[in-house]
Image (tube, rainbow, N blue to C red; front, side, top):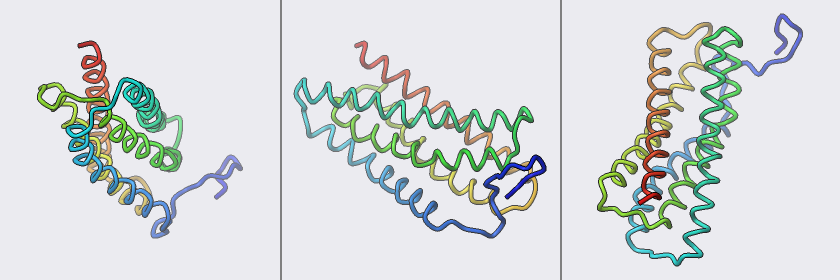
Length: 188
């Protein structure tokens, strides 16, 4: 839709649904939710050799860049909105394009992490698993929030904006916490 500047924007229309997008997001979230306990179980069963461990570590770093990088870009778009440099509709449209990258990164991190021989008896490892579970749950509820905000005409109510801010804080704490613990675990 053209805006006042003559450029075209992908603005969500109230009541309009894109069936493929939500179905993909829900499917990817379901895979991540199912994969987390499966990854924990697999990590207790499999003892990969050094070569497979190195491949899994490289994949783990790649999936971290993919998933967390997309989260940082999404948060950047919302920071631009808070600073008045873009509209909420533009921030939401740009962020919605990143969901598949975020979920692919999370699923890849869980899968590759299972092959990194995590010590399930360590408190740090358990805390990291809790943070990853928080990421998955937070990401799933973020999709609900996204749909609610997109269904509204005009500025969302303050409660939805606060919900969004809390979602971003939980996301950042969980991602950064898991990254720091992962780093510390490789140093021991």
